[in-house]
Amino acid sequence: MPTLPTPSPAVASIELLSGAQSPRPLFVLLHDAGGTALDMLELGNRLGDAFAEAAVLIPEGLTLPAADAPVSADTLAQAVRALADFLRAQQQRFNVLQSDTALLGFGAGASLALALSDVHDGLAGRVLSFGGCYAAWPARAPALTTLHFLHGHKDAVVPVARVRHDFARLMELGADATLDVASSLAHELHPALMDQAVTRLQTCVPLRFWKAL
View (cartoon, rainbow, N blue to C red):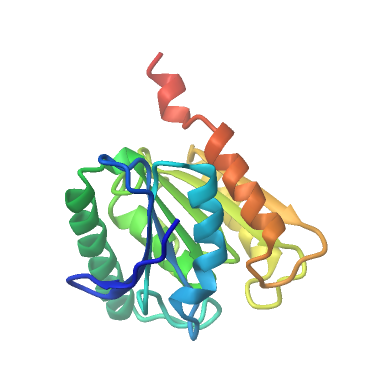
């Protein structure tokens, strides 16, 4: 896929476009605090290779403070609003349904993606969290968004025990979610986690579809 850096109404992005007249799905990738869009490029390329008609967007600077740092309610709300505006604009631009949109974040970017799924259930059909956690615990599990957590067992930034606790509580709330933990990895966007993310996207049918049968 060609890499086309172009401005958007909110933030500058790296765009990996297939050239399909009606791209499906739409992937939006959010980098970690202190990182850049280029940090997510390998994951973007893997998604483009796996989904031949996809559109992959990597916004620059659309994230939160460090995943392990306290985030004020105002900061979180402002970041969620900016991300929601960006997603809606891109869904309209590519004529993509919310259910055909996947939001993938690393570290603080993952925490922002999870926060969005709490405030705007279904705005993205899937959220994939790499080394992230909730900045504020949600009051309920999303009904229209499937959550995938991918984490390193040796993550010193966001301890895996915290993610396991969050995941257990989500299960109690009836969430549609998966958790994959890599025993030898730390806080990193490792190729093994990227490959597992692609597998989850290709093979996991959202629970809400089964319930509709």
